[in-house]
Length: 490
Image 1 (cartoon, one colour):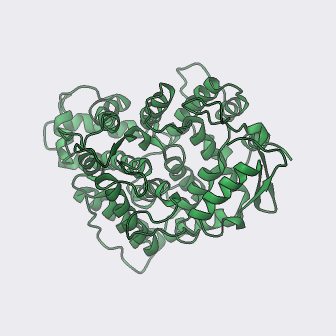
Image 2 (cartoon, rainbow, N blue to C red):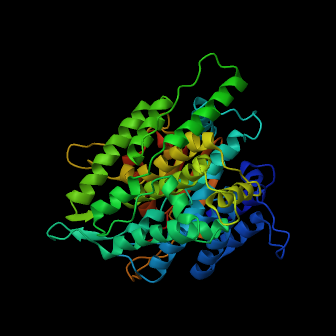
């Protein structure tokens, strides 16, 4: 049986696959030295045999992949997690690499989408349920819809580790210097990094543009609760709701739907928005799961995690909240440009808005209000759910999450499936003589009749099986875990 590296190398190198078509969307910069193709770059990543080389290649690859969907500014959060791990700035003593891990998750997701008909059918069915018209002008295929959403669910699903930090339940204070790192990084993004990425670094009109969307200010005291409130607060979405509704009406006319889309009035709270999204598209069970997630998240912040005697900001929920906050900031800003009534002089806010819109014409995937509503909210909710969904037992007192089925929420299901399986080539942040990382060359990976075959050591296999049994229903329909006779330390 081929090992994981050999199988993924072969998969990445093929033409005509969904992954190959997706990375071909990358726009080339004619003014720069020619780069290797993204497929070649991914193969260099997979062939890496040293942790430093592997991580550097992962950062190179993910920057280019994120740029396909105009998400390269998110890389500062991925790099922030990498820096905390590289400098051992994490509280958790069993912390492992998340830079190469998330890129491997991304590759595995495409591998499942290509080889597991059940997974692909469920995801495409969920896209169809969202009435996405891939034949309409300026709309993209189901495959690209998945590709853009999958970046949030895989490459960006662990950026919430920037908020990693704990407070014991006996401490009277509510502040965590570790968690504050994430808050300050987010503030840096909204005040500087976003404007650098867009090329609009002059501060002349920034204040006026920020006021358009009632952007919540950074809390003066970085308590866990105030960080949570800051992350979930999105600002007024009235104009954005109108823009989405307008695009939905255009789509309905193109599809000749008899039922006229309703006028949306979207909430400014992230958890409410996730619930509204799932309820709108017939995923009431997923909406109810978001309610359970919110209760557990707030319990961890204010009362502590059951069985651990610490208060924390769950990294998965923080990942989803940060993703949604950034995506909504961008779309909401553009949706409010028509409220600008200043002159059109060179330094005015209106001129800045015009230049920002012109810039969007030169990216691989132009912004789409309908996709924000149907795709990005979905993807960020998927990232938010991924960690607490893997928790053994009750999520918090009186809150039992229960296993997730593919039918209930397929994007989240795939995200958790690959997250549990991808356990190779991940260095330990804190070295240990009593445990060794698993190498990709020691893991078998193949596909047989639409089912993914994973062959690992018995102890690792039992761990993966246990994790999947806790989180997902019927995962054995898509994966077969086989044990090697030789045992390795996990």
